[in-house]
Image (cartoon, rainbow, N blue to C red; front, side, top):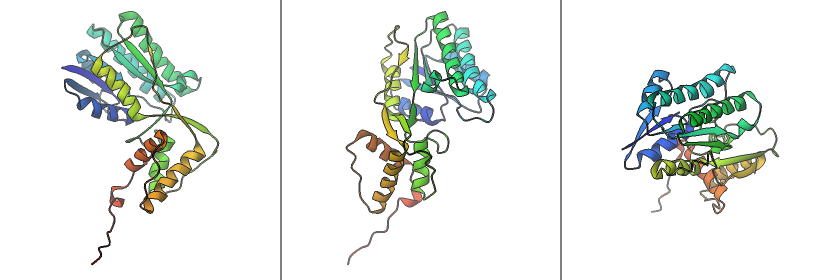
Length: 258
């Protein structure tokens, strides 16, 4: 039985990954999330055969919360693995923002540095993914991504704000991430020279196109029509939109002809 620790297990990415892992035979998931303590994290890390640190924060009131959520937690985890004396593989969820010098980007880059130092000290396999924006089911409106906000609000007739329709956003789909991480968990093959991971495909869409597409999903559903889902991005966005529908709105009255 392979034991896998997932931090941020109740979050958007963590929840999706945990569901996929639990469907596999021979894998045991150790979830970690708020309000569990650093001491509990250390104990879980000592039992783990593979670690997916998916916990993190991006929208905060004070910058210190970025340090606590992205940097300190990474240091606690790596220290626990060192103390346990195991060369436990670790797959870090980072962000393309790590290339920038804003507070969030700096905190994600600092977390990467901690993981890379762990690699230098122990030689344990490490894979770091710098994700762009991520969308999909179980994301949080007004927090994870504008896709979640648009899907939630538009499906409920709530207003949305589109500041600049020409803004281009790059996305990866949550299921593509889960497939890549699941492959590492199940197959367990590691290239020691490959530290950076990559998720494909990466989709690009303007904010205006995204808004109009999600509105078209609402309008098609009201007319009992199915949108053209030949395009992968359209198909994935439609699946995401459907996941946000209010369950009370799913029922339809059927007119019976006598």
